[in-house]
Each structure stands twice: as structure tokens, then as C-alpha cells.
Image (cartoon, rainbow, N blue to C red; front, side, top):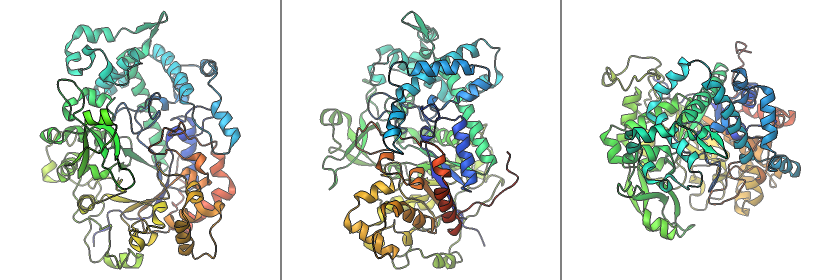
Length: 619
């Protein structure tokens, strides 16, 4: 009898690298703090570390630090470079680091994070301005030392293997440094707006290799070579960190945004892959969601939308490269805005600019199975023989004993590691492109399928055995779906990934304090309690309910393990709050605190999600 594709019970934590503790009061990164967090995951006997998109962010303008508005979907965030690793490489000394750290706070902006921490436990926020100044200074000095060394074969190999995205990204970042006041690349001088034309202008390209002079000082950030060096280092630091985690049986659970930012090297380098006006270089349409009872004007997101016909003509090569490169960095993947693969809402750019609303838009069919069939073919993955239904009949609700009986009724594709590739993949050079070996079945993929989901979305998701998301905060007081609400614990099925909340939700404690009477009554009755849970226990109840579901995977935000309130919320969609995307854990001591550590460990053990101890882990 074949096995269920997503077998086993696993658990993990959501912690974006920027939120990792940093003794210097700066942003978390891929340095010592990240390794210490992996050590905690091992000690807690967890399986997964979930992160948000790891691309480079802008820290000025709207949504500073937003991982879903990266300037590249292929590059990694320079803010995450490990200073400790640069010291080990001999590119900078500890004394120089200490001096630059002091200089980064000399403008009077430093220390704001520490002040916030003193006000309320759990309310620390990253000072991105100070963090960026410090890392830019560290990287500039390290780059000069690197240039003066002999040729590095590993660096040259990195640049050659990643040329398809690295060259355009490096030029994009160099130009962004030369025109820092520009909102997007549409505001750059005309000769720089078209990357294809720029590449053909040898003199113009050569001029970029000479650093711009600012205040009588050469600025290396204005050259493409500097940004290639930064990507080489930050990608290597992530590679080493992931290897450290994998050696200890911790898997990295990554995230891919559906859309890409207008101000990105992706749109600038590959405009033909998006619905753009060839004459003005502006988008023809931008992304959003239509009006609903809660938002009369809809939500205007503003990303350029894909030209799916152009992607199909290339057999979705850009998307294949995107997913392939992502899986070189992570072990599992969340696909954001999964419904966009079936149908997406587009708004004319002129309307969006004039009215700032998404009301005048239309639904357009997405690529659906065409894209996923191409991905599976070129990645060398076997198509599942039959997906595990994530929605049972309404009168069954996914009870675990029923699930056991149904295993003998449905046929499932099991794990088939390192098999010979299927005939359609043999001889396909793109399938075996350098760095990804054939794995048989696909790695774990999770669909962000929250909100209004149609039957077509469910069919697409289940055909490829993609996990569905469930959120415990959404389970209570649903007057429309009532007992059939898919987020209720008894409706969760094995092919699911369950969270207490996502990065867009308030923490459980914050949610509980503002929950409606109907929500509180529903949860209280569900728990079989005579009175409402206390604020101190609310998060533990939702963590326990999530852990006890039959879901394959449960991933909890760190804030809900330590029991922080709204002061620790990571993002509030639709707001311009300066605290968005900047929350930071004070110290790992909060997780190691015996009452927290012991209670969490007990929940993992009693729910069957604890990882077996392994004495063979490297020390």
C-alpha cells in the first residue's frame, strides 16, 4: 500500500531573521544569533524554522523593511550578512567593527530600540536606519580588502552560475545608489530605464564601474561589482547557516511572494514578462483585490501583473529559475497569494494612479495547471498519483480515526527518493541544470489560500498535493460558516499547515484582548471551560489546539510561544505603522525561560510532534 505523501507530525516556529536578537541593538542577521536560534530549535526538539522572503528590502518610503516588496526575487538581503563571518575571513577586524558600530549611532538615532525595550517587555523594534548605515560601512571596508586580494575562484564561480539574475540586480542596485531620491526606476534618467539598451551601450556600462564621488569620497555602492561581492558573501553566509541547521535535522521553511515589486531588478531586467507599456515603460495594469463588504474601494497593491502568455512561450523558464533557486536556499516553501495562480485582479495603471483604488478592475485567468506542470517537469518532480483531499464531507470534519480508515480507500503517491527520472525528463538539460539533483517527489509546498477560495483553487492545490493553510484565530465566531469553518480544529485535515496566526495577524494575546464576545464565548465553550481563559493562558490554548490537530505541520510565531501582546505584532496590513516589519525578540532567554520552555515542550510531546533526540548531531 502506498504511503501518504505528507506523512508524520511536525512542528516549527516563525522567526524572520531581522527579528533575531542582536546584542548590539541592530537588526538580526545570519551571524551568531541565528546559530543560537538553531540551537534552541534543536533543544526544543522542533523540526522547522519558517522565514519570510529573504530578498533585499528598501528602508525608506512606504513599508520600510517589507520582505514582500524586495528589489529582487533572486537576491538576498545585504542586511543579513554576518559580521562575524567577515571578521573570520580577515576582511575586517573586531576593532574596526567596534568603531563602525559607534559611528553608526553618532547621528543621535541609535539607541531607539533600547529605549523601546525599556518601556514594555517584548516591544523592541529594529532601528533600520542605524542598521543599514552600520552594515553598509562594514561591507564597504570589507569590499576594499576583498578587491586587494588575489582572484577568488569561488567568487568567480558564483558570479558565473548566477549571471542570469546577478548582473541585472547589481546594475540595478548601483543605479539606485546613484539616484537615491528616485521613488522607482521610472524616475531615473532615460538612458538607464531600459536594461537591455544599457547593456548594449559599452561606454555607459563602463561608466558604472567607476564609483561615484560624494563629498570628495568614492562610494563603492554605486558600482555593480560591490553588489556582486555582497551577494556572494550573504549567500555564502546563508548557505553555511542552512547547512548547520540541516545537520541538526532542522529544515528551513521559506516563502515566495506571488508578485514582485515595481521597483525591482526583476521588472527592470525582464519587462517583457510583465504587462508593461513598451513606450512609457510604465505598467499597463497593477495588482489588487476587488471591493467587498469590508472595503468599498478594494485593496490596491500596485505590483505590475505578469504577462502569462509571455511566460508560457518560454515554458515558464523565469518561474522555473525562481523556484529552483529558492529551493537551493530552503527545504520547504510557502506560495503567497495562491489564488493568483488561478485568477488575479488587475487594475488599469492610469486609474490606480489617479484614484488610488482597486475598484475599476477585472478578474483575469491565471496560468493554473500549465505553470505547475511545467515546474514539475523542469524540476524533475513526479506528479502525485492522487492528492490527499483537504476537504472531507461536511458531516465528517476530518476526524483522525476516519482519516486512518480512508487511507485504505484512497491511493497516494509516497516518498520516492533518488529514483530514475521519468521519461519526459530524461535528456532535458534544463531539468538537470547544475545545482539541483533529481529528488523524485516534490519538496513540501504550502499554499497561502486564506480568504475567499473557489473550487478551482482547491482542485489546483490538491492536484499537486500542496498543503493548505489554517489559522486558529480565524476559527471562532464565524457566523457564516459556523461549524463548517475550515479553521476549526476538528475540520483540519492532514494535508494542512496550521498556525495560531500569520505575520499579518495580531499575536494571540493581542487578538484575545480585542476579540468579540461571540469569539470568546465560542472558544470558551469549545475548550469546555466554565469561564473565559485568562489573558495569560489564551495563547497556550490556541497553541495546544493547533498542535493536537491531524495536520502534517504546525508552525507557531515566536511571539505566541512567549505570550507577547500587540506590542510584538509583526505587521498590520493596510497601515503605515512605523512598527511594521521591525519587531525584534529581546533575547533567546525568553524562549529558554523554564516555565515557557517546559510548557511548550510538554505540548509538543503530548501532541506527538516532538522530534526524537539524536546524539549524533555535530557539536
